[in-house]
Length: 124
View 1 (cartoon, rainbow, N blue to C red):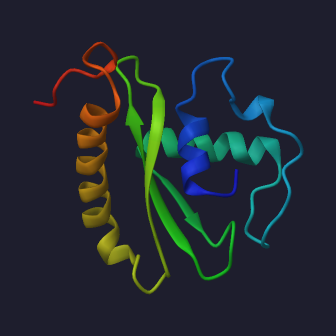
View 2: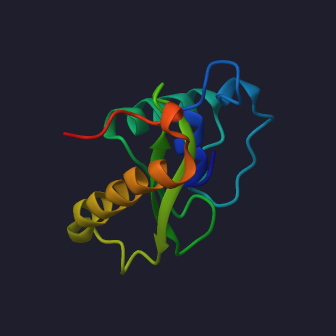
C-alpha cells in the first residue's frame, strides 16, 4: 500500500488473490502513506487508468518510485518493475521517458519470465 511495486501488484491482482480487501490495517510509514482502505482503492483506480504507480515519499522520506506491471496473457501482474531514486532524479520532466523505458523493459521481462502460453500477444 505504500510502495509503487505494491500498488502495481494490488492494482492488477487476480480476483481473490491478494487484492486490497485482503490487507490488514494499513500502517503509516510517513505522513504521505495511504492508510484508509477507501483512499487506497481510489489510488488503485488511478494506477490502473495511468498504467503505472507512483510512490512519492509514502514509504520513506526523500524517495520517489515509478512502477509498471509485467502482465500475463490474462492481464494480471505476475511481476512488477520499478525505478527508484530521489525526487531530484525522478522529475516531472523525466517521468514520461522513464515510464517508456520501464514499459519496454517490462515487455522484455514477460518473454524472460513467462512461458509462451502465459504471455500477452506481441505488441504491434
